[in-house]
Image (cartoon, rainbow over all chains, first blue to last red; front, top):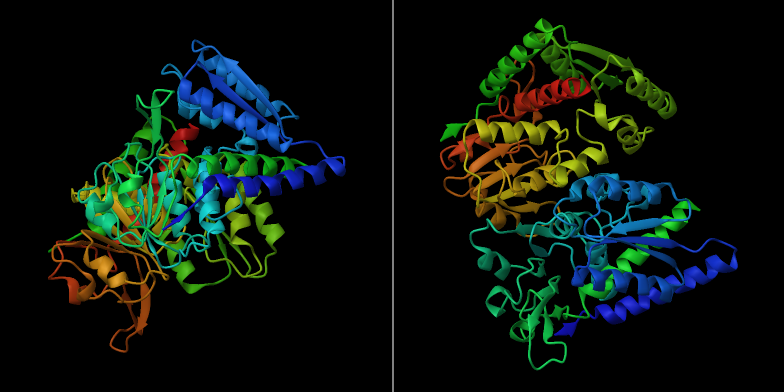
Length: 291
Length: 291
């Protein structure tokens, strides 16, 4: 079994990005500028946004963190988004999800200028991805593709099973893995809550991409000998032996499957860092397109 | 075995559409107006466009057929599209594919105003479909959904295998059938030219949607007992016993599978008429949205 090391791969890609930024600076170009909107005080959201801002700083990108109270109205949030759309200095921005219940996330997604939509959530970008045009691929699927590429994982003609059908991970992942490209050219099956025989289907997967958000649900009985496992899940589980009081768990029971698969992403250190790097790649691309 | 009768279902839907048009007229509303661009003299394209124009007339829609020589330049064609985008009287329009080789079909697709894109090919509409927003669903997948609905074919939890990954049929079909809706909630597998064990996968399909463009490729060995078969293919095959010199064949060998399946679309008279009706539904929707 080989670890699909997201931390190491991410570090390697970031070095390339940093070199591009240095060259950009040397030629008198403007630094890429990512803005992030954070509403309220959700702990996990704080962590994610913090990691994104930190990644920007390390790469020499400019970053802006815009914080708003949990009580901000939908209209006011949409007005803030419009300001970012109009701000020439901002190359790309994200609105950290989830948002408070009184705000319609779809309206927010639709309000972002597709040219600055580095999360790749706007329908125009989703559609461009679906028909194979240049676009911002959503950060998590983009990160997974880059990880598979780094380890030269064979994909053509393989059966890829995607667990979960979210707009952010499962659905785009299933589209990307079936496209005529590398990584891609898989036979893709997407399974979800209404699928009857999930386990049997997973047992046939050469590549298993798990994005369910259910801690350690996938054990060895789901896994074919020699399968490639990509674990998108990340959940905090109470653990008294840890100073923090919790440990991080994926959707896959790593210990239970590690001797059965050929490649696997660890949690943490697998898909997580690749997601942030995917966002950085999209931001640099946005800045280059604008220039 | 029961026939999924596209001709009869299409006639029924068209009656409803005609009633809506009559009501629209009575209330002093403007008639829906569909324009179609036809470049060159491809025989099949002439037939398809002719059928679309005829369907408009029967429903009381206005229609315009714009014909251009095979030699029209890309720039001139794009200018014609822009005219239609700007023409307030046109509610929706289509550009019949394929186009001559010197014209980039993707540029043409991107040039159509998404609000008038009743073929649903523009990335903005593809993306809206993918994330479950109201949109123009491409006519063939839309027609298939309506046919499954008419016959109350059960889809939830079923294994749907889509053969073919085109932007026009296979890919949107696979997205739609996996969505949390009816028809939908299927476990979907999309197979294509790089899939290794196509036959085995098809043998597991509860619902088999075939969009390969390979005449009568699917025989009984691909079909599970009791499966639902939707045949999107339509190919002319030389046949001396016919006055026309040809017969129309689907991608499925109808005679070979008809006793094995629970439902099947005939060719012709299955998906074809439903596709045209899907286009008419989109056109009426475009007109209503504008009003």
